[in-house]
Image (cartoon, rainbow, N blue to C red; front, side, top):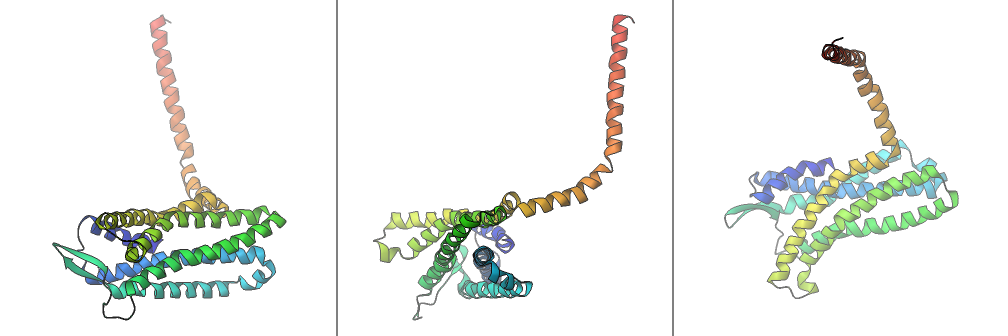
Length: 276
């Protein structure tokens, strides 16, 4: 999420103006954007599989869910995300079109592989289809197990991951559908100028919506994750409230003095007006 957020200011400026940051940043930020995208969904898949093992295969999970395996799995996940992001670095470059500079993908025309189709299909498959299949299978098995055990603790853990998954698909599915239709419009239907314009607008709108997702996960963890809420509450009481309460006696004394002086002044005014 932080990687994704890091690249957003540059894309926001580019959307309004033209690309002024040079070819090196064009390649790097395109790679960072894709790395944030792929790593985000891969780690959501990892969370889902972790919950699946912990609930459906609890005995096996005692052996598999260790720090060593967790570290190894995270390293492999980052490595796969980096490999998936390589085309963004290789094919993206700057180019002057009309009166403005652009930063976009330029695929080799003499290659036997249609890289544009391959790039979009890979993004759709790794970013939408594979995660959806894994999550449908995992959560169907988890629900069966939970219906038998009725463990409140397990249900809360599943609820958090389920909410994260639902938000991912709400924010990213429209962009995947738009990019697929835009890329394969020539094969799916007979395009005209109006349809092409509408698809380009659809990509801009859905991509903007999808970018909001990188700011949603922290909010979900804060409001749905019980452990996070408890930790935040303990942190506030220990480090924030304790520091503020050192000043509480003086603030309370100042408040008392203000109340006392106000009361005395109003009493004196009352005495004068009544002639007492």
